[in-house]
Image (cartoon, rainbow, N blue to C red; front, top):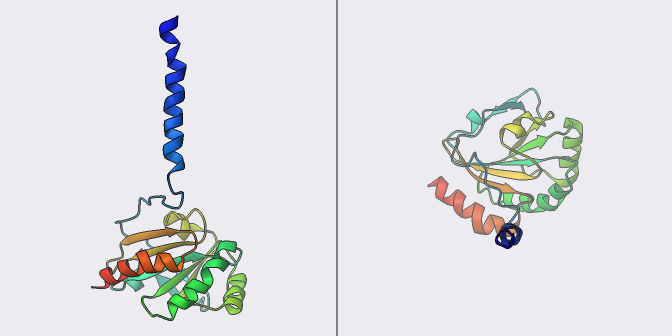
Length: 175
């Protein structure tokens, strides 16, 4: 009997070790299986000109940012001023994906808060977002000239993320 008494203690130590490792992980650093793979194909109506479609093919040959946002998204309000300032630098085209939102609400939101996007497309049922692996907004993708996803930023884009990660990556991809 005494030989088996150490088993629960060993299991406890293993569980504590896994918990300690898990607590040190950053929940915003969720690896995307799409990094290094072609961006999912899409064709969607433009928010401000629904008679015109935009597809991922239209963006080939450009390094671009896809920013997933919605009028109902509280964190998007935090991110929006950062995107407004960044758009003025003309570093790259920013395409908005109005996710699980109505066109009317999306247009009102952009009219009220400003429009940092070259254009936004609508994704009312979330299918485009699902194909990109979006599980919350905002999320931002950097896509290279060949249409390959190079980076996924989860949560609001910050000045630090732009300065330290996104802009250096974009500059390298634009070469």
